[in-house]
Length: 77
Image 1 (tube, rainbow, N blue to C red):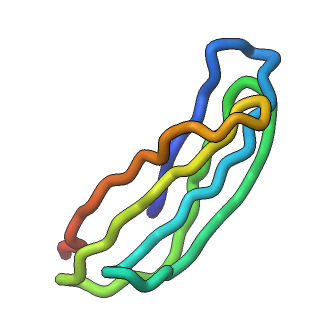
Image 2 (cartoon, helix red, strand yellow):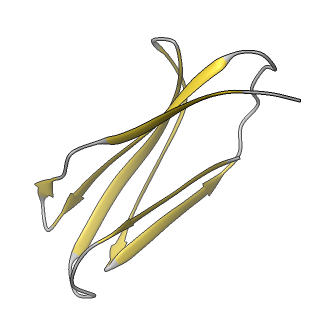
């Protein structure tokens, strides 16, 4: 399961975001959404046990790109 939240300082800000899952340099899946003030992702895709994956969140607030945030984890049983 892939989960992320992007929230602005103002409940009136427009947010657009993309959440991307990588295994090494290979893009496994990607999801995009937009909203006002706060958006969240709660997505699923198939992964393999023992492989390491990186989840990256890129978002823009009122059209201004924000620094991407990522995390890496190895899939375990």
